[in-house]
Image (cartoon, rainbow, N blue to C red; front, side, top):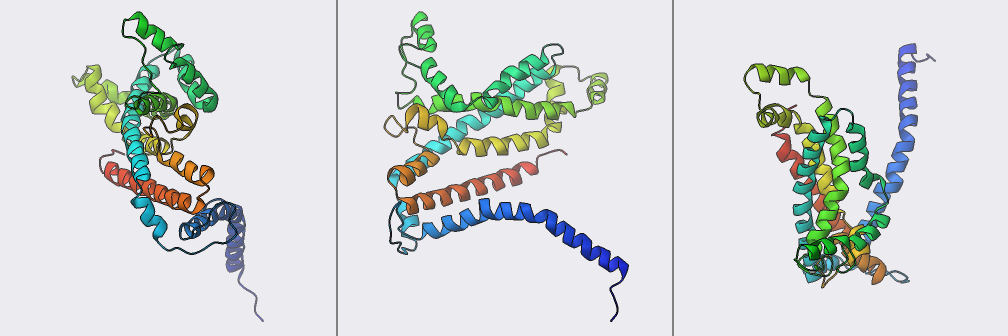
Length: 299
């Protein structure tokens, strides 16, 4: 019986070694993502409630209930409004901060630390600070408004102001992380381009930004927009700590609605449906963003 050639035997060994290296990552992907998704899909077609013994197949009734549920539609609308405020605000302000910090020489590290602090801090603790800062009678913001003669404003108790207030906090939370990404993108732009542009008569700061900096930051901007939109869609902690979905449901977002259905009302099957719809929505939104923006990005 003839043995395999040495070259073929080496190729087989390399494939086995490659499969061995990939196996832990594959198992981790299977246990943390694929299996939970499968369980989520299964629960979506049942009437399972937390603690129930019997589980019955109900077909598409959970999906129909979700699409006709006014609470779900309100939560979806609030989430879209939140994203519409946080996404452009965090991207534009972080880009502005990155450009200003990038020009600093001696104090650049200090500003980077200051702006990045919200990313490293525990937000549950910071939410308590925001609760005090925005307090209508004890907070420093209300004190400043009274000094200006405007009077007290209940930022978290007014239905028309609660969601925009949470969006401002979300922008504050995202600026530091996005700033670091933009700083990395700015560091890759060759200085020779600015010198050449100045020789060609493009000496203004705004002109150089629009003709050199902004186009070359296209890949970084696309990444920042996608990650910021996903983070904005996943808003939960600010709502859970500061407003609990109130006042009057004005700040009830998708993840908080899922939390209420699953862990307050124990309707796990319905919460699974909402989670599945939420994941599909984020996936489609991210793909559309990437496809649309990829055509306008300069690599």
